Length: 143
Image 1 (cartoon, rainbow, N blue to C red):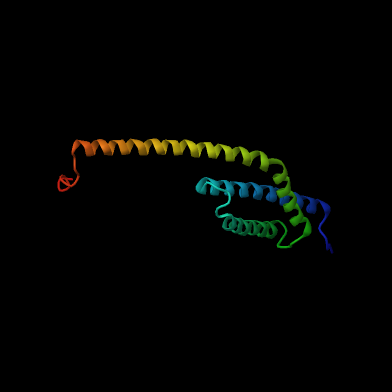
Image 2: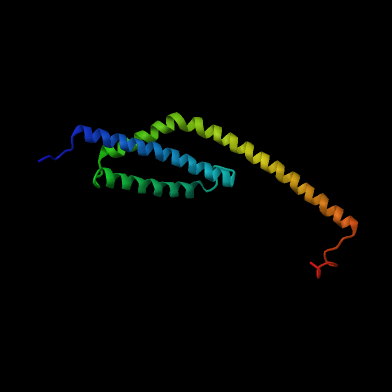
């Protein structure tokens, strides 16, 4: 009768957990990027975003523990997940997210510039239409 799994099984489980932790780090940054693109700030909706991410990561951890470890919660599984997230956080996160954030800011500035020019064009067009004496009220029945 075997009470403890062998070392290879534990090591494989640790590395699966580390992979999940690394992947959850990437998912967190993609989710933050999504919120940053929509709101223009990291600060808005931070608590709600963190709660949503926490629920997602808890579900992913539950599925890993259920599928890989037969539902058993073991220290090496949780430690592997934490190690994977720390490895991602210390290596790639600062490199990727800073560059992506700058790129998104540049893209937002370009869209804002186009928006201002488009608004100015329509204002000038409306002024020209008003100067010409055209009135939509006169032609309302024909439209």
